[in-house]
Amino acid sequence: MDTPHRLHVPSPLPIVGRVVSAFAQVDSFAKFAMLCVLGGWFFMNTLIVRLGSLQHGVRFFDMWAVISDPARLFFGVDTAIQRIFFGLICLCCLAAPLVSHLLKWRIAWVAYWAPLLLMVACALLLRSRASAEFLASSTDPRLVSGSFIRFADELARQGGLVSRHITVAAGGYIAFSGGVVLAVTGLHRRRQRA
View (cartoon, rainbow, N blue to C red):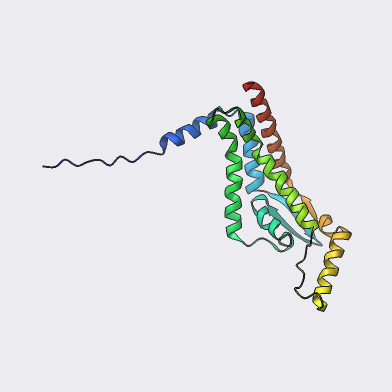
């Protein structure tokens, strides 16, 4: 009688064990900072847009959709694909400090800077996109609607209408503070390895 052969499938447990071990090596202050960034990015509003009595909040994981079309600050974000894609990028940046403990490279401490660098890059991109053409102009500049849109766009940029209605919310401050703490922790790790 033939004996059954076992199929050997590699288990993901060694990888999970290494990640758990790396997370255990992160000091408690950095873990708290990672938790603050997670809360600020996914569970709290990063920006608040106010128009009269209306108030609209934007979370950080919606930032890619807002950067691609700044008018979504006022009208809301409804693109699930951009949310999922940028949400995964956010999670990767949030988990980046674990790389410093998984890999023993000298430069691995830079991974602690990933959340802060992502926030700064998004802020700069949003600022440059919002200061550029805010409203999409018509394809035919001779039409009255095209002239009106160019006039409204110029008024919004010169009058600072956009910047007066947007404020940083609590989630933005908490996530930024957590990112700064992680960056300082990365510098501290660099000094320890030197």
